[in-house]
Amino acid sequence: MGNILKHINDKTATLTINRPEALNAFNEEVIEKLEFVIEETIKDDNVGVIIITGAGEKSFIAGADIKAMQKMDQASALEFGKKGQLLTKMIENSPKPVIAAVNGFALGGGCEISLACHIRIASENAVFSQPEVSLGILPGWGGTQRLPRIVGYGLANEMIVSGKMVDAKEALRTGLVNHVVALTDLLDKCEEVASQILKNGPNAIAQSLKCINGSIGLDLESGLKMEVTRFSELFSTDETKEGLSAFVEKRKPNFR
Image 1 (cartoon, rainbow, N blue to C red):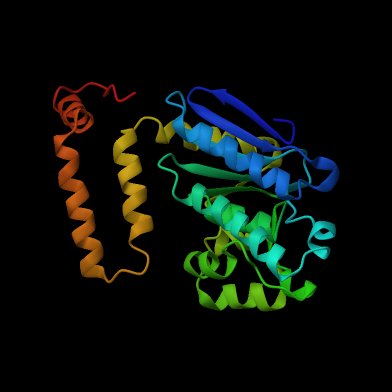
Image 2: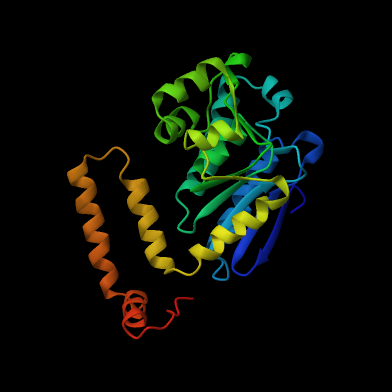
């Protein structure tokens, strides 16, 4: 795919944004290619977990291509924003867990891509920022919506209205990332987490993600009703029967 590299190993697909000369910044072509590859990977029965990362050691994704944005008017900016939101929603709504392997700069749209992922693992040189206000614009791919839900409104307000950069240490302290490791260990750590996920029932994983995502905006009682409904529905599946039988029989379940 050129700007998007794909590698599958042990049911884990690693997708690499491959524009190191531009710090892996996004333009419309990269958005469309990544969307295509993610959709293709979600449909692939040989894949259970997806990892997204950037080529090189400096940058995960350094936002959108500013030179391209400079040429946009209101109509084209709306279209560009909608494309980015479609991509982030596809990642967020994936029934297969998506892990962001953040290797360096995660700026603007790059930060927003990471926010849409279910799990974020950062290298020690990772930096997160929503610097759009310094350009006279605002985050348009979900930053104003997802960041507050992950780190709280106080830090999200500060990051978005000041454009401040958050290093890996602060990102871990605030819950923006799940783990911080040396750059050389980043993909190994992501694969370790993926391996743990792959031991579990794929349908149970998908339904768990639906419950988590679906709870946003619901009151507790509505969320609990959704949860118990999906919990009970799993009992009609072969996957659940296998998992419960394997536990009773003291053996490993054969889910995949």
